[in-house]
Length: 414
Image (cartoon, rainbow, N blue to C red; front, side):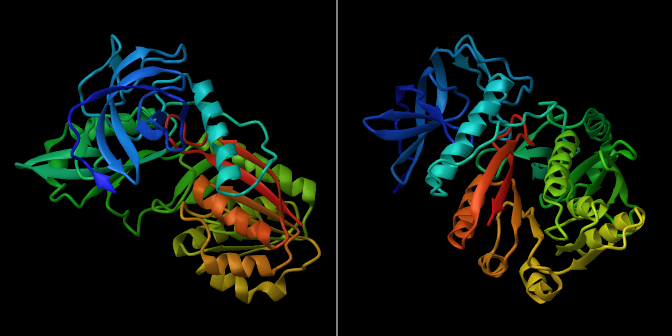
């Protein structure tokens, strides 16, 4: 059932919890109401906006009893409350938690992860290690992508609003690196820049590295562009402009160190690195002496992974371009069953059914599953455990502060 035919009725809610995705949960006569920009324990007034599958979505109107954890958002486009009332303005849905103290945000996300493991993954008592906060909660992103909208000849460049149709034109982003914001401001001051944004299908990506500074491109980077160079705790890594790299370099270093710690503890003879990108996790294993096979569908990333291994003098790392499930099914005979680790760092969609089927047929001693999407991870984790693995430990790393998202590091063992 879906209906948008609500009278502009104001109702009162007490917020019982904050759900995965960042929306507060309140109930009226047992019916769940979702509302953004609130904190557990607050008493608020809201207006109904939409009903879907017996869940009512609402917009914050006024805070009757505020949480002591409430703070003023840094970004003027986050949900703002002035004198207990919602300030009327267009909002960017990207930041779900700018109105709350950062320490509490991390605890909220940790609770959401634990609940998801129980509810979606059927893990009765998961071993969840203490959450890892980000060193910085603002100005951490090394890449952002803005979309364009043209109306009456005027170009808007910014982020999609909640309707996923309209573009909110913003002068800068509170999550982006300072040099990216400086470049956005500079380009937006140039009339000639807007002349290159000829239709609403154009995206503009802004990227920063310590070595290269800030740069931008429209739609896709030029295939002839030089590789970027990222600084990490393992030294510099080359990265094609359009290939995946962690958007939070400081948290990326924490993740590298965590994987390195596991590899050193387990001392595997062989490591398979699925969705390997530019090869960082595989190279960690290669530096420890393991035989490594890295697989990724991004041909440019594989080319660079080979280079990143070569400059480190590693001849025990092999990188293959192709679909993860299809490639891994061809290389089983090259993997010693007695002492092997599988590293998985998939996109938000998680593992395909074919990939799970093939992976779980093989007797990996340990699986390290790094996930940026809790729902698809829980689905995959449940199916992996059906085949004889145990979820040994899980831990969240807040790779995406102030947003609804976070990373998790999970270890499966037989």
